[in-house]
Length: 486
Image (cartoon, rainbow, N blue to C red; front, side):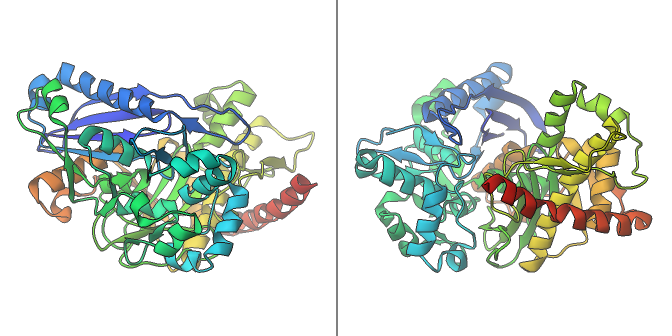
């Protein structure tokens, strides 16, 4: 038996997985986010600890014998958060989360102090990453920075509470801007740019490695026959990729969830270039990945649902199953800023082309298309960085819409595959990594892909119209940026 836990922003999810890789039970404990100022996003790490223990308590209550037989525990987690610990290993301040945007100024300072940062880390400095956040603390809260002895990411802190070990895996470490991503080592130069040293960092490991054992008192609490090992584990997207079996070079998937991800597994390190592509280590050894991110994917449809007063299902029911032509309205899905390719946390969205004749259905279709165009920008950024694919699995809540997936396939000119069981997420991937760490089995034998149950091919008759619509869409961002600046 194995447990996987995902340290998410809205909750901590724990799954219990048996030897046949069947999920026996799942439980989620909700979390809240504090936003004391515009652009700030924080959580108290102690809340993760309480939620994680309650989640495993719930599994134990339903399946006491099976939880007692657990051999390994894995974690996946929200990336980029900054947990600062003092000399007594106590948390010094709330954790600034991945979607905290206060550190824009520090991004420029970081790249000026570390001119080789994009080549070494593979990524453009963004406010969401960990390094600028810590620099913000040094500038605005110097007393706290001066007392900082360790910096941990969210799941590494939870591991520390559960095992006593300060260890981080390569995939999560890639999102700090402190990792030499090609060499899979902490970069002294990157740390120095932030006023830190190697002593501040946790030990590095691969996601499949053994990285501590559960504290004896917790093993007793959950009736475990022996103290389970912890896997090195994974960041949230890498954990999701492990769950999907996207561990071999060339494996690709598209996640049409609250935010959107275009992912490709690679056999070597390729810096992300100028298009805000993430180039990270994968959670499995000797493997990397590139990733483009759309900040408001299914979140855009959820927003339009709130504004229109209709449920998402009602909005989609008004549309055909396949598009007939692009909408005359264009939607820019920058409701929370945009990551790829613009790296602009302050830009905001818009509808363009409204008229007296505009209908609600045209606006709904425009929302779906605007998200697809944002994915197209991400796909082109990946291609410019060397990652090209012509088919991919599609997951996430939005993938349940035949219309949306048809639009997406045509806009991307990629065949998309629906999966029989593709929604297990990072917690399931973490359980797989726990199994590998505990048993020594190979990645290939454990991380098998789910069954494909349908293919959505591009509509050749609409490729030209959607190509032209995408060009129109791309003209919107510069105009919005000018308006926003003024």
